Length: 378
Image (tube, rainbow, N blue to C red; front, side, top):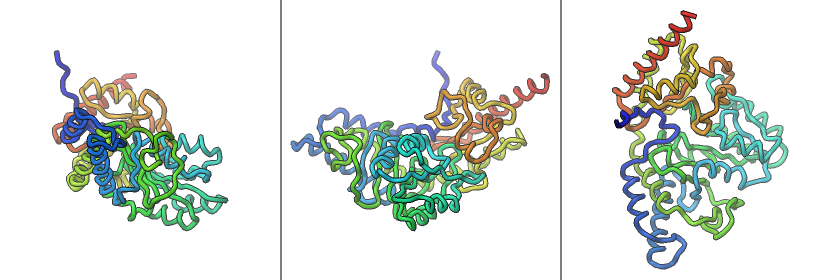
C-alpha cells in the first residue's frame, strides 16, 4: 500500500525543487561539456554558468562577476570567514552553525554579540565589540533567522561596522527568495546564498561580493571561478540555481502573502492552547516562518507525532536533526530551557494550502489535548 502524501511544512530546511528547475537540470545532465573547455560543448556549458551567474546576481542586486559559486551555503559562509583572515571575527549569537562553528574554530577570541528578547542583534553591543577590537575585523550577521524567521537590522549594523573599518558578511540564505534583497541597500560587503532554500538544487550556493576583492581561495586546483574557488563547475546544479533565482524574484509578492496564512494559523494555535508562545512575534519576520511552543509537550514528541499524522515540521535547524537539545537561538534570546524544549518550527512555502494548515491544526490540537489529558491524569 502506498504511503499517504505528506503535508510538508518544513520549507526552511529545504524547499521542493521547482518543476522548471528539474526540467532544466535534467536537460543539461543529458548533455556533456566542461565549462573550462574551449570546444563547442565547453562553450555551451560556460554559457549556462554565465547565465546563472547573472540570474543569481539579479536576485540580490549584485554584479555578476562578483558571484562565486560554491558547493552550498555552508561552504559560502566558510569562504566568507576564511577568505579574509586574519581578522577578528564578530558574530551574533543567533547565527547558523555554518557561521558559529567556523568562527569559534578560526578565532578563539571571536566575539559573540548579544541579541534582544525578540532575537535581534543589540546594535549598542555590536558597537562596544567593535570599539574593543584592535586591528581589522569581520562582522557576520544573518538577514533572517532560520528558526524564528526574525529579520535582522542588517543595514544599520553594516553602517556601524563600516565606521570601524570592518568588513561585513550577511548570510541571506533564509531571506533570499522570500523578501527583497539588495546588496547595495543592505550595505554589506559579502553575502551567502543557497539554491535549495527557494526551489533550486541541493548542494549549490554562492558567496556574493559587493565589489571585486582579493579573497583567499579555500579550494585550490584548476583556478575555476576566477581563481576564487577551484573545482569543475556543477553546470547542471548552477543552471538550476540560476533558474530558481529567476523564478523566486518573480514570486516575491506571492510569497509575502503567506504571512496571512501564517498569522491565522498562529491565532488558531492560541485558541487551542492559550499558553502557546510565538518566538519573535513582535519583530519583523519573513512571511512563512513560525516558531511556536506547545505547553508541556517536548518538541521531539511533537515532531514524531506530527510525522505519524503525515505532517513534516522541524524542531529547529535541519542541520541539528537527531540532536535532542535546546536551540542555541532560543537560548541567545533568553528563553528558559524547559520552554525552549517545547518549540517547533513551522515553515510554509509556495505550495502550502489552507487545507493543509487545517489538517496541521487538527493534528496539533489532538497532540496537545492528548498530552494534556495524560498530564492531568498523572
